[in-house]
Length: 561
View 1: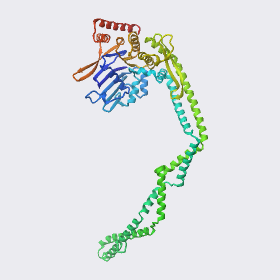
View 2: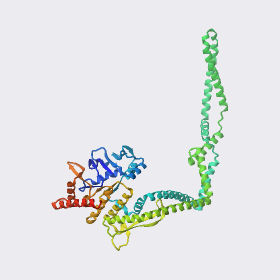
View 3: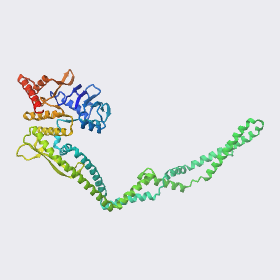
View 4: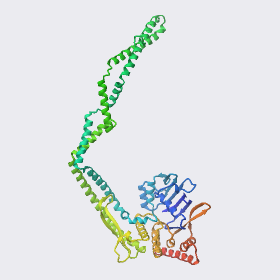
């Protein structure tokens, strides 16, 4: 159960800490005191959206922390599936909101919002003011039925989802093949053109790089010849460097015999002479073999233009162009084998549809098994909530198309008066009645899921009198088996509190803060009197509140035990 709530710098809340107890925890307060902010803080742990506006004025961050004592074995197992393990039986969920971002943590370790949401879903369920409106949507009604029978329905739904994905894949393949004859011919002609264009080029991987090298050489041929001839002249033996080095070598040879220390220098000069001689011979040979004819240049340029044109259309490398050709060949082959491929795709589609039909049918049958029991449970729950002559049923229809949920389309139908035929919820019930129906469903699902903590935000909207008393009794029943945290404005529900909290708003100059504190028995009665009498609490109103509290004690000590 939720044992501790810590909220700091969130909207009107400067800092509050609340110790919740087992059973029915009731929160009351004046309109605008901040009850919705308190619930909103819990919604943040369930993955609610954050914004900079949530942070209290002049604060740099907002913080929400929920501490749970995990006693339910199913909750422990669900958390372990998420690789989350209680420490000393406790789970701490926290979310810190800063400008433009938030940080979520589970037991002090950073987590994603999705992980936080999944963990919180194992521990508590929040029913907001307007959530009951979702009951009007048939997909929500199916979702509730599936949640009721989840131990058998969810595994079967996974089989349906897998079969549906395969069915959709086969359907897409069949659609891709199902084209008109003229269109198929046009596609074949286009593919053949592209394939022939690539094949006619007789591309060889790497030839583009060789051609580019050759093209650079040919296009700069004149410059190469002029430069090399000049170099040959400068380093040659006709008034060039070779001639001078040779003269130097001969002159030095005349004096070496007089000084042995000159021998190494003579040797170095001889090597230089040899290198220059080799260089000039290689350079002369290169010049003799250098041919720059117009035909070779033209052919090289034409080939490069062809390859670059193909690159622009099919890929920036020859390997990519050839790969594209292979892909188009594969498409062409499929189109040529169109009749056979279409027949095979239809057979594959038929098998996938038959499989989907079977698993969807099995899912529908399992749902129908749970449907009857859920109908009885809902009728019992609604009678507890002052629907004295209620008749309720879940109608099954078959969708025209398959979905990942199978082919079932359900609708909740109800009759709240004797002699009236059942009709869809939206055609009969009011907002207050819809709220009570959701309360009954929440109670049923909570027993199935064994969730320890249920949170209700003004579940009493639109009800009063005898109905309000029935709702309060139902809340007490739920509170006997679960921890319930309920925000209410009705004294009948507040009187049933095992622990009663008051939410107050304080204005100090230009600063407004929201505070929450537990009430003792006397303070609780005083708050009940405020709920009963409004601005003026007369002795009669106070006595009425006291009697209401005493009757609530009697109800809990007799009927609930």
